[in-house]
Image (cartoon, rainbow over all chains, first blue to last red; front, side, top):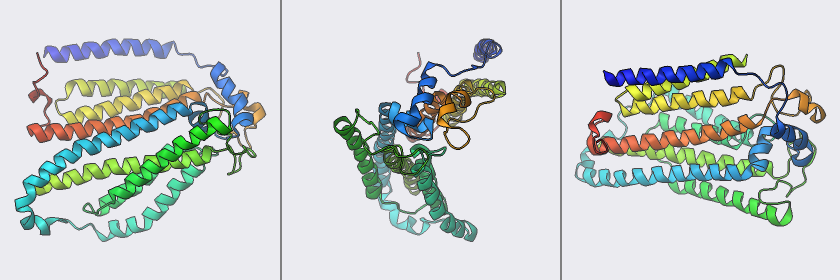
Length: 248
Length: 118
């Protein structure tokens, strides 16, 4: 009971702080110094129509490299943690495996789901590729496009939970795109202004698809990498669940 | 208009914290953290909003020369993009650890994990 009381007390304190913040909030009427720099220089220096993309891939490219690394670490840790329990479950399930073999697909998915996913998966993959290739022109980019790619894999998993995905292909796509990202960044040191500088290629005309230097290239590889990482996370979780069911 | 987004964000943070502090089930605590995370992202984006301006994308409607007067602050949006992706990673890790804990103890009730309690 006292626990509840302290929780309510804490929340009341937070409400007071938040109310104070909310009522004293004044909207800016003009851009602050950093934003003004980005607004003024993006079109001439970077050549990307989408200023947010210019910030993420070039101005704060190192930040994005760190972010991709964190995501990679997350995917690897999930693979590591779940692989151990998978092996254990496998060893436990070995004697009973034969009797359970006919139960691998207890509920076949319906006609509607199967046909729908056959129709939608290529279109979803296409949309994902579109989103990350046009990241420097329209809202979107590598992370969003990668998440869309992974949602296609999720749909495939929903249709057929026992579907086998090639781990090798996924990890190859992931490591190759990560490597290319870093190599392009290092090439920037030698042939352009610095690490991850986008002027490795000409910046082109603002608003066309071949503009903004190497931003579209880098963002495409980020998209592939993020898609592969999200997919591997989902597959790891799904496969562990399968092993767990067999174990019971 | 941005006070609507700000208020929603604060309410989401409060809901998330309340859920994380009062629930006993680990999965519910993870869901509460995700809700609080969404609230924080919403507030950061709302702070970058400015009245009668448009998205920070240069095209026919916003020429590069008039970008200073026409666009909102692009920096919070870039930061929130990072925060969302990291949030997904954190949620996936929490779920993995929850699975691992369930495998060890056979329960998701947090009050039965007493190893770190004093």
